[in-house]
Image (tube, rainbow, N blue to C red; front, side, top):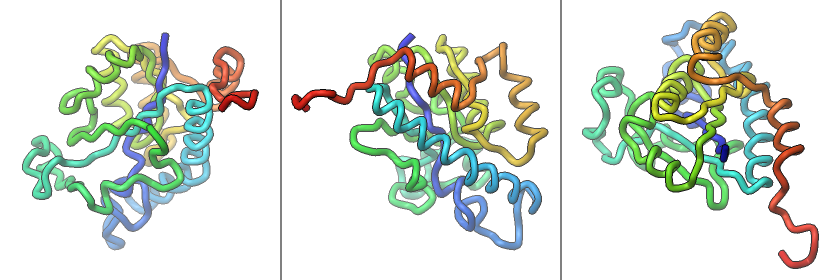
Length: 215
């Protein structure tokens, strides 16, 4: 199976302190404890692991695909019903639509824009993956129980083989993370950890970097 790395919603909307859904210092939909847990896991574990995986996939000549929330229009009229209801709006050029710099697209990485939890309902991701011959999707990003889970479930329904990279995803508590894994693992995806995936790719996929002076 030909793999790709899906980096889900690692943007200022929901992966940066003081921005997007975390912009109001006096209010948190996840509670103060949940918010602190989330950012501790994101900053100490998830972003460093995603960086490692992005570098490895690029080195092996495998696709790194970035998925983000962003409308086509400035007023957001093309958003899905639930994004309108929840007040989620990332117009083109907005801070919320920007990727977190440490894991942002590089060179010729692909970017998919969406206005829903999963990109499969309102983007060209399925046709794109089909053209690229990609059948195995390694999923990382945030939130594990929202966008990551929705993407995995939809991908499985579309006939892909999703893989959840457990230590490269984050949500607001250990309990929610584990509940999500229990729902998905063995039913909609398989679970893998960063080091295990690194070792597997290093062993089975050759680097595309030239060892000679040709390039």
